[in-house]
Amino acid sequence: MPPAKRGLAMVFQSYALYPHMTVRKNIAFPLRMAKLDQAEIDKRVEGAASVLNLTDYLDRRPGQLSGGQRQRVAIGRAIVREPAAFLFDEPLSNLDAALRVGMRLEISELHERLATTMIYVTHDQVEAMTMADKIVVLQAGVIEQVGSPLELYRTPRNLFVAGFIGSPKMNFIEGEEAMKHGAHTIGIRPEHIAVSDSEGTWSGVVGVSEHLGSDTFFHIHETGLADTITVRADGEVGFRHGDRIHLTPRADVIHRFDAQGLRIE
Amino acid sequence: MARAVTTRCKSLNTALAWAIRLLIFFPILWTILISFKTEAQAIASPPLFLNFNWTLENYAIVQERSDYMRFLWNSVIIAGGSTILGVIIAVPAAWAMAFVPSKRTKDILLWMLSTKMLPAVGVLYPIYLLFIRLGLLDTRGGLVVVLMLINLPIIVWMLYTYFREIPGEILEAARMDGATLKEEILYVLTPMAIPGIASTVLLNFILAWNEAFWTLNLTAVDAAPLTAFIASYSSPEGLFFAKLSAASTMAIAPILILGWFSQKQLVRGLTFGAVK
Image (cartoon, rainbow over the protein chains, first blue to last red):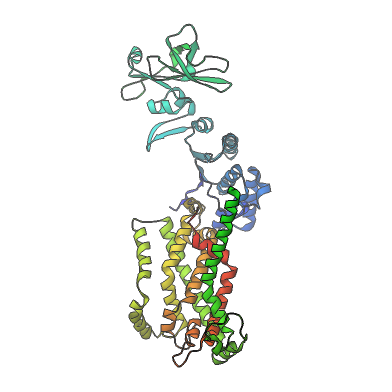
C-alpha cells in the first residue's frame, strides 16, 4: 500500500516543507494531490491555519518563517489530511530550548483538540514523559518496556529503562550494598536520596554541584558505592565542593535488579 | 602598512584578472575587428588595430551569398531541441541516481562520462552509416538526437549534482502527501531545482550551438546550422579572412548575447558544488 493511502500523516524532523511554495500551497499540497475540489481545499487550509495561528503567514514562503512557524506549517500539512494517526519524527529537535517548551505544549493541546492518535518519536525524555499517554522504550530496535510515563518511572522493567527514564539518571549500585537488598544491582533516583551534613546511611564528598535555582544536583564521590552518586536537593541547600555529605535513600523506592538486569519485584 | 599592502595586492589582482580576461577575449575581439576591414586590410602586415576604414561590406556580401536566417534557424532548432530533449531524459535519470542510488550508481555515472573521452571521429563511421540507413542525413531531427546523446552525460551529471543538494526528506514528504512519481518530479523536484536546470540548459545550449564536428559531417544544405555557415567561408580557392570573420561574428553574436544576459546563471552552474 503506498504511503499516502495508509491514513497516516507525518511530520518530519527537518520539517521537509516545499521551499518554492507559499504556506498556503504547502498546506494544500496533500489535498491537491488527493484531487479535492478547490472550495474544500480552501476551507480546510483556512481551518488548519486558524488552529495553528498561521492565518497571517499563509502567503509567505517557508524561508521567511521562524523555526517554530515552519514546524507549525509542517503540522498543518499533516492535519489537513485528517489522518487516522500522526507520525512525529523528533519534530522539536531542531528548535531552541525555549521554543521547544512552547511547541511541546502546543502539540499536546492540539492532541487534546483533535483527539487523534499521535505516534511521537523522541530522544528527549522530558518530551516523552510530559506528552505521552503511553511510552514505548526502544533500544536497538527491541522494545524494552511499554507503559504510561509514571509506570515506567515507578517500575522500570530493566536497567535500561531505569536509566533512560528520569533526569538526572538513576544511580546504580552493585556489590555488597546491593546484596544487602538481595539484588545484583540496586537503583535509586537522585530525588529519592535525602542529604544531611551530620548523619545518613551513606557518606561521600561533594564534587560538582549544579544549581538550577529550584533544585540543586550534587555529584558525590568517594561513597564506596559507585564512582558518582547524583542527588537532588532543594535550591537552598548549600554544600560546597569538597564538603563531606551524608546520604539517606528512601527505602520504599529502591529498585532491585538481578544479574540479567531485570527487575526483582 | 598592512592596509596599504592589501590595497596594492587587490589592484594587482584586478589588473591581472583584466589581463587574463583580455587574453581570452582577444581572438573574439580580433575576429570582430577583422570583419569590419577590407580583405586587403585583413591580411595587412603589420596588422591594423583600429586605424582602418571601417566597412560593413563583408556583412552585405555574406548575407547576399548565403541566407543567414536559415542557418540561424537550424542552429536554434538543433541546439534548443537537443537540449530540451536531453533535459527531459536526464531529469528522471538524475532523479534515480540522486535519490535511489544503487551500488553501481557511481560506476554508471563514470561510465556515462567515459563516453565523452572517446574521440568523436571514432564513431563517425557507424553513425554515418546509421544515418544513411535511417534516412537521417541532413535532417534536423537526426542532429537533434545525435547532439542530445553527445551532451546527455553532461546534462545528467550536472542535474545529478544539483539534485544531490536537495534533501530527500522533501521528496518523501511529497510521497507521503500522496504525490505520484510524476507529480513528485513535476511539482516538487523540478521547481526546487529550477536554478540548476536553468544553468544546465544554458550550458548545453551553448555546447550544442558550438558543436561543429557532427553538424558539419552530418549535414549538407537543409539542416546546416551556423557552424556550416562559417565553414563555407573557409574555402580552398583563396583567403577571405574578412568575410570569414564576418560570418563568424554573425554566428557567435546570438550566443554571445545570450551568454552575456545569463552570466549569473552560468557562473553559478560552472562553480556549483565547489563551495557550500
